[in-house]
Length: 382
Image 1 (cartoon, rainbow, N blue to C red):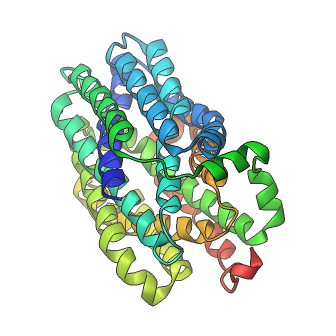
Image 2 (cartoon, rainbow, N blue to C red; image 1 turned 180 degrees about the vertical axis):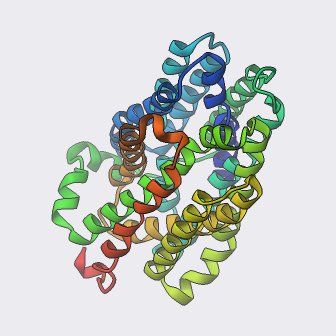
């Protein structure tokens, strides 16, 4: 777990460095808000296409080769971004990055492979904390390197740094991380590949968990994908300010996933903790939506961080308690986020600088109802 934690931190750090910068790069190239949302959305659409492929390949050939391949692909996309000279290159770079985004789902699958049912939530929480660490430090580093002024911001060096970090992560996987999926399981995957849709049809509990998680993800993608555009339009905030705000959000997420989940799951259970996380996120999104000053956004981000940190590992642990929750099903996690993000862009379009926070909060109502259904289920229900 220590090696996996380190690899996830380094890899996601490279991704996080570019989070607050892509909208500003598009703005410098003269892209209108609706075109910026399309640039962000192409990542999600390509991730939606690639996620099932990576999930099936990780079942058949193991987690290690998929981790290495996706990290090398990410590095190539960052190099393309570093040399971007216009909007078409941005589209191509983000499309490649989205299609190669199989690392997080595969890392979650790896953690589940090496965990028992008793400590699965803790292991997934640690991987989530590693991912959160990358998201925490990445935007702050990217914003600091790029600078605050849109006109003079340096986007070349952050992209090169991100590419180098993904290469380093791939090297660490190839040299330090053993394969977690046995040859027997890989052979069984070749003989009888699993179907995510068959699992959802056959297992009502898994179906409701997936539906609830999709509704949650729809709201989360609103904040993740449009915060920089919204902050620029409403408060004239530059990359450095946005990076600091995302740093504050990620610190809270990591604290909850590393300390809160470990202590609260034994007391509350995974279902109740997930519902509390939903409530915190809704409150945070509403607080951000009505904030009249940038300083007032921070309390809302804290609530969002508590909600995300509580919900994500709890939801993953409940879903992975199914014996059929193989890497093929876990590939639905990035696919779910990709679909939610893509649909959000289609619905909001150029309105991303208006009221995305309130629109995203609405997405959190269905999960509360959905999660009432599987609360009393047992292992036999799977």
